[in-house]
Structure formats: structure tokens, C-alpha cells
Length: 515
Image (cartoon, rainbow, N blue to C red; front, side):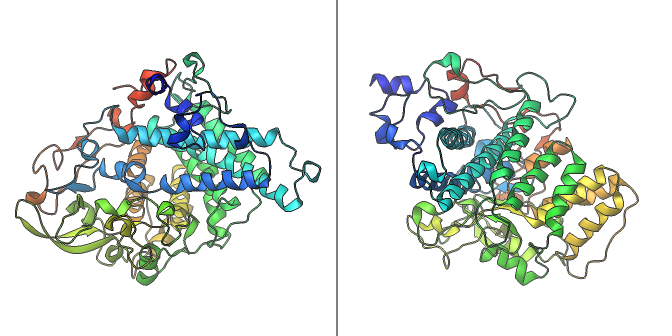
């Protein structure tokens, strides 16, 4: 009993380290400052096993409520439906507090994966992975690749922690104390709270991200391709583009994004059938990195992203439906519309019937993935972490922000030509006019993929929640959860709070303003 009480006082970061590779049963038996010697990296099999753990974690961190739906449902495009489960309800209503389990889930998951990456990087540095050390050439290359993937994954986790839990990167404020992420770069278990890491500056955090990507590229020798589900050199480039855009480094963002566009390995879906296949049957033509989801394997299935948007039992209603305002930003000729939205007749628990559009970008996948633990497994899918469409959007925004409106227009027109039937190419007289359309196109293209909150934060914009399709099926009609929901660009809650459990256990931690 004594150990269980002490466990509550250990920070999320250190708990992530201490539970590395262990089950809950193991935790009842082991001291908090050690893991079994038998779990040290010693041979090729150990590297292979640790690599599986890296990717298994990533799959869940690119799907589901906490990582994807929360940031979408927090913003302007969806309304709660009468009879909802209230999942993400507080976040949807902006009644955000540091005790919410969503924040702890996201924070601890990224910190746990950083700990795993640290363990691999540190373990490999102490091991001779040459033939002299007992590694065959193929085993040595595989171990080097795993270390490279670990550097990439650490960078990926640090970046996402910054996206969720830090303010937008601005050069003028990035060096302010405690503005960045709290993290450790070593595997160093301890129960001494005085040694728990505090927050770096945001500038230091991003420098670490870029440094890790440099180290990753030295070791990841896998060339990119749409059929690959692992970290490749193209995946590294895609993250570099995303990071550069977040840092307002427009020259680098444009260069990295166009590098991927021009290499010819990833083609935009250019007709309704191909766009539909991208989501309905997990088509991979646009995917720079799509994490595999083996069919019929319960533990390997990704999160239930579509579960919030579609009824999963006969006669039920979804938790959320799109606003009419969101529906209206798609033209009649937009080939994405019939893939993203499904006309549905819903009858709510208060007896109201409505013919409305439901969000169907993550559809029922009964025909692909075997349902194993309830009908919700029908909505599992293969997460598309990076797509070539996003690179077109990054290139367009980066060129516009750097003053090259001509090049910006080329990339935006090319994307919209492949998304809108009979699209007539446009020209723009000003960067402001261009950015108005670019922002709409990011909203259309990346809808439901968890980026909306981060985009608003990067653009320093607030929002007003859109007009509902039918007010009387909304769970809070006319309230602050529907059209009266107005969030200012300076609202502190655009940045998520550090989880209260981490604040309580880590004396070095500093909370974000407003919590």
C-alpha cells in the first residue's frame, strides 16, 4: 500500500520513464528507480522489440478523442447533439481546467514515448553494434535505423507537446522563461522530485526538435514511398516543413514542402473516386506516412476517431454534427463533400427528427477491420500522419508570407484543381486576399485531422462557433456552446494547461497563464 500512495507523487514525465516497457503487474513488484537488467538493449532482438513499441504508441497518438477530436471539437465547426455521451463535453464548451483527463492522456503519452526514445538512444550509445560486438551487417543497419527513428520520434513528440501546451512560436517571445516544454533527454529514473525537469524556453525546445531531426536524418536510410508505414527520409522532410511553418521560417517551410511535391512520389487524388478511396478504403497515394493498421488484430487497431461523428448502434445519434457554416464553405462542385459528409436522418432522445449532414471522413470500416470488442471498432483506420496535400498548403502559405504571391498561387491553384470539379484558376491582388482563401482551404482539406486549433493559434485568430444545421437538436441550443460561443484570439485557453497531476508532483513545473 505504501508504494501505491507514493506513486501518486511521481511526475508524469518520470512515471513515463519508470513504466517503460512494464505492465501494471510489474509496477507492483519493482522499485520506482529501476527496470530489470534483462530489458537492457543487448542484441538485435532487443532493438526489434523496442522498435515495435515505438510504432504501436504512435498509432494511438494519431487518432481518437484526445489527440485528434479534442482540438477539432474545441473550435468552430461542430455542435453537440441531444443525447450525446458528453465525451469531450467540457472541452467543447470551453470549461477547460487542468484536471481534465484529456490533457493528462496527451501529455503523458508524448512524455512516455520520449522516454522510450531516450532509452533506445542512450542504450545504443553504450553498445558495440558492429560485427565485433556480435551484430551482423543487416542487424547493425537495423539498429542504426531504430536509433534514427528514435531521434525522429523524440522530435515529433516534442513538437506536438509544444503545439498543445505552449503558445504560438514568436521570435520576440520564444526565449521567455518557462515558455517551452519540460522534457528529459536521458533515461534517468529517480523518485527525487528535486531532479524532475522544469520547462525550457520555447526557443530551446524548437532548437532541440531541429537538432533531433538532423540526427535522425543521419541514420534513417529508408527512402520515401506511399507503400511504406515507417519513418523515411521523406517523413523527416515533412516534419521539418511543419516545424518550419510553426516557427514562421517561411523559406525553410517552402523549400521542404516543395521538395516533397517535386520528387514525384506522392500524387494528389484528382477525382471524386480517388478522394473517396483515400478515406473509405485507406488509399495511400497521398500518404507520405500512413501508419499500418493490421486487419482483425484488436491491440493493433487505431483509435475511434469516427465514433464521435456517426451513430454506432441502430437508431442512435452521433455526439457531434457539423455546423451549417462548415457545410457552406464547400462549393457544390467540391469533390470532397460526398466523402466528408453523409446525409442522415436522426431522431434525438427528446423526440426531434432532423435531416442533417453528419461528418463521415472516418467512416464505418466493417468491411476492412474485424470488430472485436464492440461495434465501435468498426471506425478504426490507418492514421495518415503526413499527406502531400498538406505540403501544398504549407508551400502556398509559406510563399505568400514571404512575399512570393506568384508561387503561392501556383500551389494553391494546383491543390484546388484536384479537389474542385471544373475549377477555374484564380489570381490574387494581395497577400491578405490570398490568405483568406488559403485559410478556408486548410479548413476544408484538413477537416477533422486535429489541426484547426493549432492553425487558429498560429494565425492569432479567435472564432465564433458556426450556425447549427438545426438548432433544436443541439444539446445546448442558443447557449454559449452554439452561435454564442465567441473566443478571442488572446484567449489563454487556446493553449492547453499542464495537467494538474504534473503540477502537483513536479516542483519545477510552471503552469500556463490563465489556469
